[in-house]
Length: 49
Figure: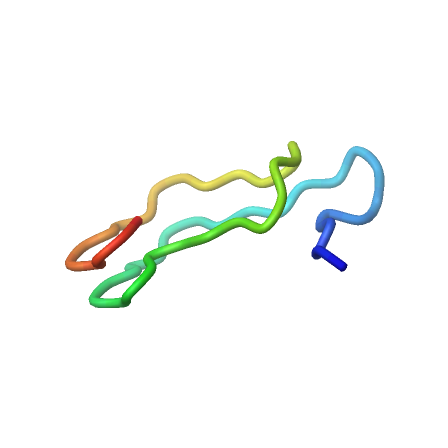
């Protein structure tokens, strides 16, 4: 099955302050679910973000 993170109700996952560079895919999510905060990251040179 799909990863349904965050699992606990009212919790969040934070992805902050990263450099995501020179990948085939910069970032990809498996589900359209609330609870993931992505901020302050640098995306550069990825073929797809």
